[in-house]
Image 1 (cartoon, rainbow, N blue to C red):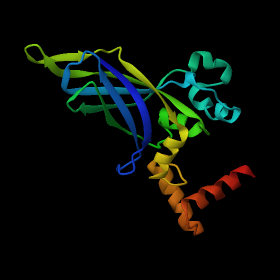
Image 2 (image 1 turned 45 degrees about the vertical axis):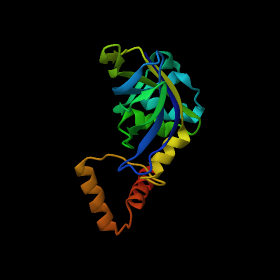
Image 3 (image 1 turned 90 degrees about the horizontal axis):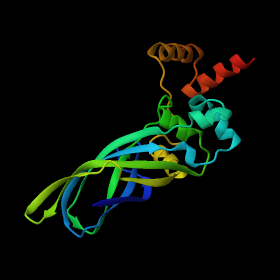
Image 4 (image 1 turned 180 degrees about the vertical axis):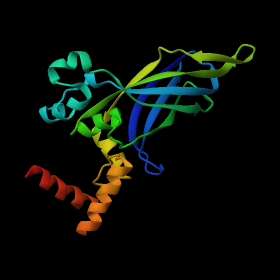
Length: 208
């Protein structure tokens, strides 16, 4: 019988894209040797488990609507589903769990992260998979029960550090090709050196 806990988190500095590394502690309670296990981990954000400032509430309106409706709309968000193979162990082991991230603000999880100024992000990890362990007559196979889960309070600063590894001081917005072509043409016509300055000029015009 396995029990799970998430004991730490940090940015993954050597990943090709923004990623987190979670420390996953697994304990086998019966004392049997675990030869290996193929785990599938579903990671969800549970937004009900933290408080929000007024500024954060305003930014989260796109996701959850007006604050007076949050009792109905503040539902869990899917972050990722990842797999990991466990090494052989008896008793307790800890393995790294790599979680890929995106800064695409069309993705609900990214929009949620981006709206938070500080504090922690409440995560819920749900486990399933196949377990190979030492039985009385050799190797036996079992399933990881669907009800096994663990919680983790991910610091917002850790998520931001993971983003800054790849997008320092900036973000990422997806645009249609036609919009990119029009913005590029505007930059060329106005001899604007950067995308930021082109958008800033257009915003100033729109605010007049």
